[in-house]
Image 1 (spheres, one colour):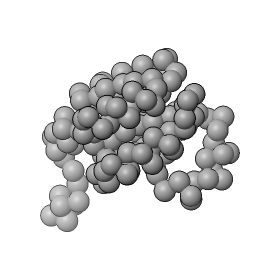
Image 2 (cartoon, helix red, strand yellow; image 1 turned 90 degrees about the horizontal axis):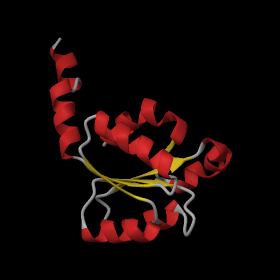
Image 3 (spheres, helix red, strand yellow; image 1 turned 90 degrees about the vertical axis):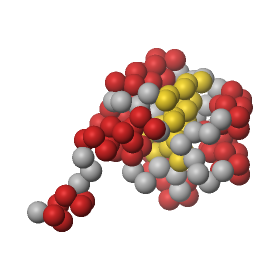
Length: 136
């Protein structure tokens, strides 16, 4: 019984962790961005900022610390990978998660091993995102 308690995170501990996680959401699609933003808020993450372009994301990421940056892989001006590389040059402490539209899953599957970044299909955000955010 004590083994189970050691390996089980209580709801209170999880809620506390959510309150302290700062997240930057980067997605050019307003509807998608708003859906994910609202999902994060209703899931208990209250330190969430959102932007719709790489330039603003990079500025925010270099003037503020974010525990996690969720970035769309395919941005209009530069790819989400470009932002990820720039942020990783600045700090290794920020976790970067790529958001990928379902239509790009074959590309992601082919490049997955090379990316070395966690990724999530946008259609699975509500099912898988919280676990990915809280995973060390």
